[in-house]
Length: 131
Image 1 (cartoon, rainbow, N blue to C red):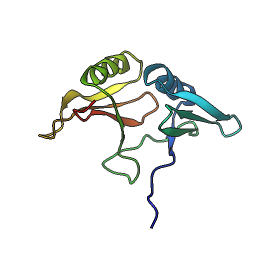
Image 2 (cartoon, rainbow, N blue to C red; image 1 turned 90 degrees about the horizontal axis):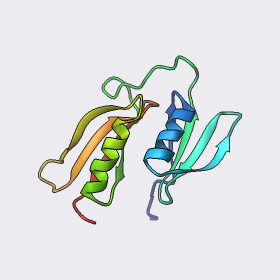
Image 3 (spheres, one colour; image 1 turned 60 degrees about the horizontal axis):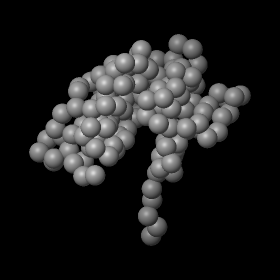
C-alpha cells in the first residue's frame, strides 16, 4: 500500500485578494498560479500548496460546531519566537480575530495559537518544541 500525503488543501474564502495578501505578506506564501475566471489563486510556501477559491457574495461563514467541514488547519513554525512574532503580525491585520494567544498544547511540550484570517479560515500555528 502506498503512503498518502496531502497534495494540496482547497479553501473557500470570502475575499480572495484579502486572504491571498494575508498568506503572502504575513505567512510567507507565494502565488504560484491563478485562475481568474473562477476566481482562484494557488499559493505555496515551498512545502504546502493551498488553493484559495472565491465564494459568491453573501456566502455564509463556516461554523465549526454546527457544520461538517474544515475545523482548522495547522502550520508548523520553526521556533517559539517565530510563533509569537507571526501571532503579533497576524493580529495587526484588519479582519483577523484570535481564538487564543500562544499557549502550551497540554503537556506535549508544544506551543500553539489559533486565529481566523480575514477570509474566515481558522488557522493554527504550532511549534512542536523542536527546531
